[in-house]
Every structure is written in C-alpha cells, then in structure tokens.
Image (cartoon, rainbow, N blue to C red; front, top):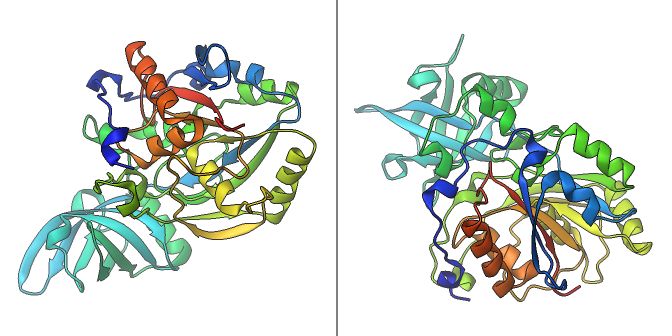
Length: 361
C-alpha cells in the first residue's frame, strides 16, 4: 500500500509532553467496528467494564534503560567531536547496536568517550570503539566494559531516551525516570517504553482483579527503531527494525488455555501484540518463543491470536498506525484519529489511549 495513505495532520498542541496524573485518568477512545456506536469516549479507569471475566491482558514487562549517551569522538589526526548515540539492541556482553549522530562523520575504528557533557565516566572512561557502520546512522559499538560493569556505567552516565517529538520540545529530567517506566517493568533492555502500559496503576490492577481479568507478561525490548520514519513510498519496500523478545512456554500455555475456554487475549501495546503474533502458529496456537522479530503488520494481515488491543495514538505514516489500521480497519482508524484530534485527545508516548476491537472477529 502507498505510505501516504496513512498520513494525517496533527496539530502540534496535541502532542503530550507529560503523562496524565493519575495515570489511569487518561482518556480512552473505545473503537469497536461491530458496535452500533463505533467510537465512544471514556477513561482508562473504565477499562474493566469493557472486558469479561476470563479475558487475559498481556503486558510487556521490559524496562527502559538510560540508553541516550553523549560523548566525544576521537580519531587519529583529528580533533574531538561531540556525538550522540542511542543504544537500541544489545548483541553481546560488551556490544550494542546504536543510532549515532552525526552519523555521516563517524567511521569504523573511531573511539568515543561517553559521559556527562562529553566528559569521561567516573573512575574510568566509558569508552567504546565503532566496530561497524551500517545504514541510517546505525553503528555497532564495542565497549571497553562488559556485563554488569557496562550496565552500571550506562546507568550512571546515560539519559532516558525520550521520543524525538518530546525531546525536541524539552530536555529529559528526573521525573522522566519514573514517568517513562511502567509500574511492572522488570526486564532491563528497552530504549523506549511500551507506552500503553504507562496508564496502569495499582488501583487499576485491583479493579481488574475484582473483575476476574487475568494478567500475563511477555518481554519485548523496544528499540529506537520504533521512532524511525517510513521513508519508502510503498509499504512493501519498508524494512522493519528488529527487536528481541521472549514468550515463555508457561505463558504460552496459559494464553492457549484462555482461548480454549472462550476468553479473549487483550494485548496492552503494539509491542505485546507483535510478539504474540510472532509466537503464534497459523492455527492460532501460541508457542514458547524467543528471538528477534521484525514482523510488519499492514492492512490485509490475518491476525492469528490477538482479539483486542489497547494502545496509544501514533505518528502519521508510521508502522504503528499501519498496524492499528490492519487491526480495526483502515477507514475506521482514520475516522477514530479524526475524532481524537477534533475532541482534544493527547497523542504519542505520554498521551491518551485507545481500546481497539478486532475488525474480523
């Protein structure tokens, strides 16, 4: 499909720079293609009323790390230059894939000293060598530290990698270390939050428990590639970024049991959905799964396992807007976004949420 079919105009003031307080007070647009009233306005705290006892929510328990690093590039015969690197996929105890700026000036073999304001890290430098250079500013960084020592150094000098549409308007601060993290985050490795999960609070979890709604957890480490624009003119020419994830055999068995007794699988966030659909057989059975997924869901995709999706409002021309258009229908989602924009919904990572019913169910 043509990428421009997924474009829309979003007023700048619709971009949320801080989350709602409390988190579950955010607005919730319910989109049900099968209902007489397709679009209805609610609050996230109303979520239990749209679910049935025995339904299962699937959460991504990845934990955001401070993966935005600032440093000085050193090269023999050249002066130092300020560089920025956003880690997005760990590929070894000491090696990370990253998006670097200014990407064109970085070469293989360059040394980069990371730290606050370009200064080296405490006690020793958080130094890395550019091991490999890829496309679109992607590099492979080989750090001098490895394992837990590298993790500690990144935590000490790194910044929360706010999405570019927020970072362009304000710097990150201490509030973001809590705001840009779900209350159930436990598996470190993401450089972007699974933002639909940011709306959940202990009080909402208690309400879901009372309603008989199950909770299950999978892990997909969200990469910075989720913010990359689609540069192709047609979706068939777009190469999806890879993200590492795991669905345990125990969780797969529990979700299969939910389906077997007539319950619905409700994914919280597109990351959970992409992982469950990667782990599902054509029959709809979910298997234990671990690896890197580059699944790209566009209209025409046949969903195998997921029945409902809770998600935030996404960027124009983005792979995520394509995904929700595949899930609830192209025309339905365009109408939903027009409604959201005209009625003041807040967009993107810190914005409001939508609850989508699958069109073909």
